[in-house]
Image (cartoon, rainbow, N blue to C red):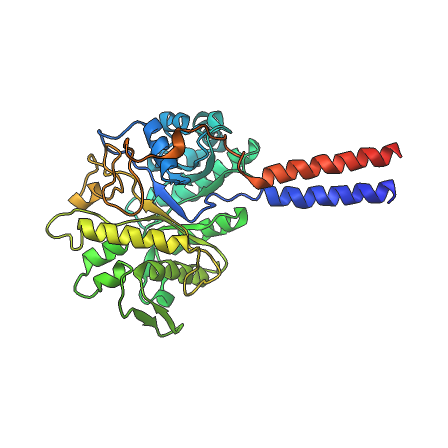
Length: 395
């Protein structure tokens, strides 16, 4: 092989390998947990990192960029989506320099030791009551992404924004789902931007809330993944035996009608309250256990939904702990998989942070990236190519 041909071959290999290694993906697994902290009795972030490693939970989402939390997760290998809180959006939307200041203060100093893989810009903005926030969301997201681009971080950190089901005009049957008319003028340009930068559509989907609001017409077994007759969407002729998949496919239908049929849907929040007020139907410990156990089992199959069978379903469960300082109905303070002392709230297969859990996370562990075969394979291939190049030059 001549020098020029070999050099072109080397560049080709380098280009292909580089493109495969640096594809940004904020959520690589199928099961994550939301780590909310509106409480005054939670374990330290260091203990939480230990708990998550014991449970082999590798993906979490927090609602801010708390420095104590980010320091505690350094070297854990747990991948984190941090939040840019709603109260910052209007300021961040004004200019890229303000987004740069936020990123430099709350993200960049913790890299690469803490594995920050995404920034959620706001939470449940569209469909809410503050129209000024609706207007600020897209420019804020653009400014955050521009700041990441200037810092060379867009290949490792994804920008997104979770939505509530309030963005939909209707969601039953799934194929009939559309975005609300007043939301669409804000949603479509946001979707266009996220499509351009490769971000998915994040939706907070709660069968619990749907059942709580209409227990007379919704089968509790359908909401809990238990055996039931299910529903048939007469337009698509697809059968649904659980509401979770129906809610995900409703989002896919709305995206398709908006012109984004290939955008992935990821559930940024889902869960079931273990306790509630008298008028909160279904909020029981047994129902919470059933929903979260069956959800975990469903996600572990790494399968798609009836409407998108080839796109693996992914979800972040709400929430890691009960949060005793949250306002609102009793259910809001009772979504936790774990109690404040780190013990399990109910058994869905996890071990709590107790002396009897026998977890192996006390052992030394490798830092972030050391377990990714892609980086090591990439380095090995590059080293081999350079060695061959040197031999070729020498001959």
